[in-house]
Image (cartoon, rainbow over all chains, first blue to last red; front, side):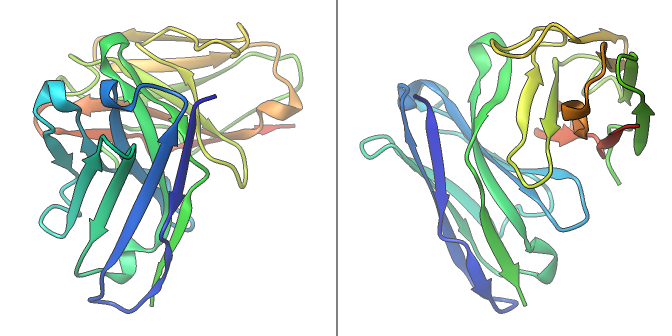
Length: 121
Length: 110
């Protein structure tokens, strides 16, 4: 069974830092990209970041709103993806989801975790 | 403001067919594949359409989608109460080097 489980959310003051984790299981982690997506209260979905696999040089991509403040990384040996969030702003408050992407079949975000809530206040 | 444009709301009665539109540009929908997601209240989003018009296993064939030029649309036929949710289109954007979501369409089953 494919599973993605986020953790690490919580309450943090503006300007603070937080690291989210995404624990994945049930598939060959090293074959997939992992994305982070968030949904702020009363707003729609917003893509945040992408971690590509070894075949793509572990390259990353970020939304303009978080570039330079957030860093995504992965540990293939432990099947974890991390989202390090620095210089947090009130507008970063949201439910954060990690999701799997299989670009070989153009299947973006086909499995999602349950989310972890970040509140910046 | 989202670069992919969706109507904020749509509605229909049980059994009806409803469509949700998604308008983009050359650098996203025009050259990239479109995916559609359903988000029921209080739950994580769910992929309902990938690669423009493909259904993941388990998604009923009441859900269909198409793409033409820089626009895409999702259609739900035989509308059911459990289809009441927020629906989002998404596509990669080469000029932004990132994924874009539409603003979301809240579907109400009357």
